[in-house]
Length: 251
Image 1 (cartoon, one colour):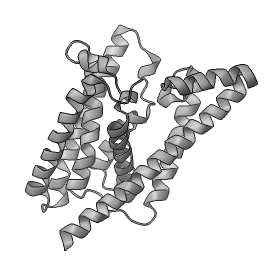
Image 2 (tube, helix red, strand yellow):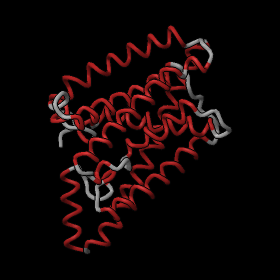
Image 3 (tube, helix red, strand yellow):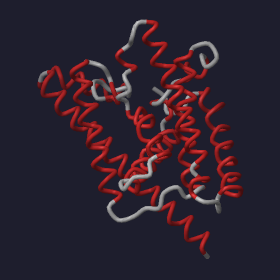
């Protein structure tokens, strides 16, 4: 699986440029408004993501449900976290916002480095002819757009304790997704097998040497650590960028 395919270069790079321009426009027009106004773009994104997912689940049921469509993938977190981040006003709001910013940063970083592991060139080619491909491309690009929106409109200010909340949340996700991947024998978030061909070869070779169960235990543990570590690292990088932007705007 390539890091970048031709179709991704042709579509994702221009999309990133559009996202940057829109984020700047939002910053100039809404940046100094009260929070309930600044939250509107994120609320719109959250509602659209939910609508896209409802369409996907409905079509999957009609066609004969595919277990792979159960929303237990890493990017499925957006249909749970972003609506809460956009509309929740309770006492745990700071931690929810930190988690939302963290997973948005993680997706953005991964899309910039390795979009091929998220969706393929075939998904881009089938964009107008296959709803599942339309959903995959649109969903991930829109979820990615949430990150510059959060940054531009200052929808979260990092505070002490946020990193722990992000890490605990990521741990919880790995426990649920990792367990269900084994129970249902379905590759949620790469917990059952690896989408990166060379690494999958290593996993299969290990099975022949030490057996299926020990290999899978080791494999799941490694994938869990990678998920948690990448999410935490992404939040740390986001915090650095967020604080840098804040320093420049207050000078």
